[in-house]
Length: 541
Image (cartoon, rainbow, N blue to C red):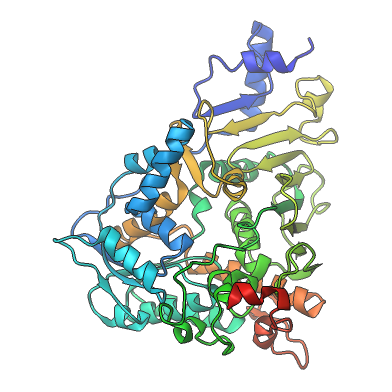
């Protein structure tokens, strides 16, 4: 009997599922039900349920926020606090498009046992916005002019760090040294040396340290981990993952605030250890475009893809990394590439094999990115027995040359052009996204996940996990070990791009293999294209 895609869909009607799961097979006859059961038995995959998280009881966790820019506002909303301006913007968006549920989702979000007590931002407008939005008669929020003052005040239990990359490690280390809990955005560090110093501080501290890779809460990724561990894909030899953006926001050309000036911004504090250059708005609001403050595509976006695959495969730090690319789509004064290709080599990695022992070993992780094209390229894990497309949804396709499924393929119980497993936790939901960049994050599973068909902010779940561990003990899903892997791997990519050569990792000594005459951190921080181009003068003055 030949199975059609329509038969496949009809056969889903009687399945008890979370979201929607498709299996090859149909329920059009007793015989086909047996075939479907045979496939289910062999795959033995179950959609993952969210882990139980102990409650956040007792006194509220007193939180200070350091950095209230784009990501700072998002993290604060995940904690349950949205500005009036954002609420009004979302209300109007919902009137225009009834499918836009962002305000509805926020208002339905579980209340966390937290208390905002302080803000530290070098831009007066942002600090004042935070205070005006969240300070009440019962809870007067304090502004701190310096992050050290906040950490040492004794008035905060935890800090949320959403600053430019070059401040992530110094602020985290200061907090950990004072046993103040830390939630820091990725990438975890800006230099190689910082990565080791921060790891030492986290291991010695009594505080809970978490890195903001919120996709570790996405159910499709935990389901993907189960699929890999059960050998469904066979030996995975190649991963292809990508960034595809084609708008100003996605290229980090954020709006320049009209009230920004040397009088409203503490420019010297913003610069910190960065080169001392005159004040300009372009560097302040679009800092991701320069190595002095940011980490380029390798630290800003590759880290997302690396960590979401590391949480599925637990592959660790690559043995070698090679990168190429350039500034090809936004020649606007930036010195970080806007097109990049990164190959990470894992010669000893294995996901298991259905073939002769010893035949298969090793994997290449291939990441490519462009900020000049928005065509959606899925993340693909390519195994001997099957291929998996992975995002907020996942699909598994059998390979025509599979050893494990050879009999089923020959009997046409499986077909290479029909998925044997498809998981869509959002089935039946209609999503609205506000921009091409939002769609990019949504497709990758970086914005939200679904629990019993209800959309939930992944960042909320990630921060809730951190708060629960603070109160109850245990481990966060992305702590110092995972952050260390992410940071070192990203730095290897940045170094390879800058040096034009392979960068290698010595797993035994836990260090990068030295290159004679090369200081890795000097290379990472170098700004060869620092001078602003003439056409940028009006924008930055």
